[in-house]
Structures are given as C-alpha cells and as structure tokens.
Image (tube, rainbow, N blue to C red; front, side, top):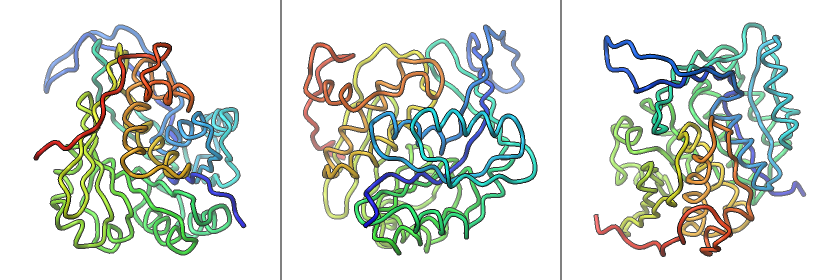
Length: 313
C-alpha cells in the first residue's frame, strides 16, 4: 500500500526579489533598496514547506532545459522533496518578479515559462503512482487548468484528499470545483471566483478556508457558522510565501490525521512563522516549532495561541 504523503502539483520559478521603500502606485517610480535571486513558484514553495514540516512530499511540475530549472529542482531535492515526477520541457523555466516593501507587503508578476507545458497525463500518472488513501493532493493555478483538473481526478481515483489553492485567481469550471474537498483562497481570490461559499457547497466543495493575512483564516462549512483562526503575533519581515506555507501546513496536518479545526490552527501558526524570514522560503517552520507555538511554549516565536472561536459573521 502506498504511504500517505503530500503531493504538490504546481509551479517552479526563479524569483527576482526587489526590496523597495514603498509599493508603487500606477505611474509612480520608487527606489530599490536591494535585490536578490531566489527559488520560488507556488508549487515548489508549498512542497518545500511541507517537507520542512517533516512530511514525505512529492512535487509534480515542469521546468525548462536550462540552468535555472536544474537549480530549482536541486534546491527542492536538498530540502527533502521527491522530485522524480518533475517534467523537463523545451523553453525557459518560469520566472517571477517580487516587489516587497519594508512592512513585508508585496506584489508579484509571474512569467509561466515551462509551467505552462505541464501535461495532464503526466500529472495523473504521477499521482496514481505516488499517492493513496490518507494522502493529500495540493494544486494551485500557475499551471494549466487541465493539469489541475487531472490532479483532482487522480486524487479521487486513489482515494486521496484534494485541496485547491485558486491562485492566481480565475473563474473555474463547476466540475473542477466539485472535485475539491477543500478550496483555499485568500479573501481577494474568493471575491474573484465570483461564487459565494453557499454555491460552492452546492457544487460539492467540502469546506472553504479563506486566508486573511495578519487576521488569520476563516473555516467555512455548510450549515455552520464560520470559525476564525487568528494569526500568531510575530515580527514580520516578509509576507512573500506565507500563503504557500499556510496551505502546505494544512495539507501536512490533514495527512497527519488532524481534524479540520486543528489543521487550520496548525496552518495559521505555520504561515505566521514563515513571515519572520526574507523571501518565500526565508523561514520554513518545522513541526516542533509550530507545535510549541500552538501550546504557548515560551521558546516559540510570538505570543501564546488563543483558542479559536466563531466569528459570528
């Protein structure tokens, strides 16, 4: 029987990170305080975060036949991620430009590159060969929509859970949404889906987890009041990749057998802790670090964790 693990289907990019005095508005020029090159991509970030939490993690994606692709795959391998299901395709590896202000707020511009060539058949085969009951399949939208749909279909085929992080947001077909056990947008992405949670539940989505940055996250379930899971108070250095760490930590917790509430709590803390480092993978918290913060251990970063409760909305 295949061991339970996290399988991440998504993008791998090279990140060009620019630190600026403030995020520019339309037509504005702002000074750059520094720049770094880093490994990124929503899928690769999520896989690295899952592996840092101690989960057996498989990354399914595509890179170009270039040095950037080999470097990105090598970095994931060193992080403990199984990269045997990475496709090599013609053309350049994906790129992203990340602009970050002194408060850690950011915006990101993505050039998909090889990510656009990820094949549905490859995704389906990789999942059926690596996942089984108890596993969690996590996908996001920096790859072709048919590859994402293949991930959902394969998850159902092997009896694994399917989590969709609909980022960057776009309108999604009903059959893809109906394959989601968990839909995990941020508050902006939820609005851009143009579909209220009640309609998502009607389609078959099991639950919706809405991430809200420094306010934490809300768990929405059919017929129940929303439950808020506050973020941990930390010294924020960079919010880039915090959402990726959140969704990866949620999937890790579910793979470990945690219920939905505990998984959201675990994920909210992990996402918060990730903002204390620079870059999308500047600080990927370990499971012991997250668990110490959950119990309010003084050795953890930040304040003791408050008990979750209904938001009343």
